[in-house]
Length: 163
Image (cartoon, rainbow, N blue to C red; front, side, top):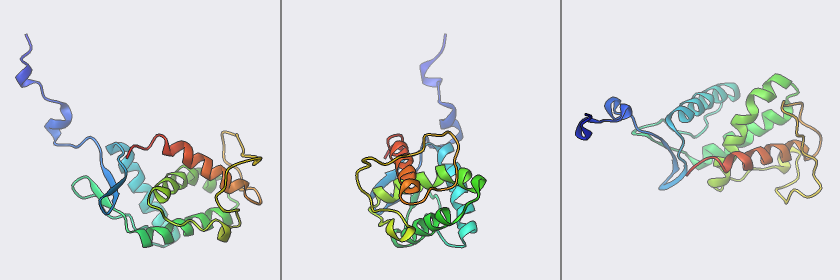
């Protein structure tokens, strides 16, 4: 016979929380699982080093992370500028998912993404825009197609990113 009063979740024994929060002020932008949060935070550190810029994404303390909107806006636009300026297919492939995740957070935080500065049309309904449907990433296309691809990926991820 199993005693219900002695059953304890493995995570409770470890004292681990089941998720973490990425916030701006009192607003939660994303509430991922611990594993997704750890991976994202490691990628943040990697891209901060790559761009030689702070991201504005603070440390995780008590399962909460504050994001500084002004610093984050600079980071997001620098990340897009780097993405747009490179033609290295592996760099593009490795960075696409991270950038799409960052774009979801930027949108939720009402961060201004300067698409015209990066050589893409401003956000508009994707009517008659050809978005690559390949499984791999290739060199960003001219015009707005590269931005449309990233925005499409961000929309797709945003539906799977709980607040």
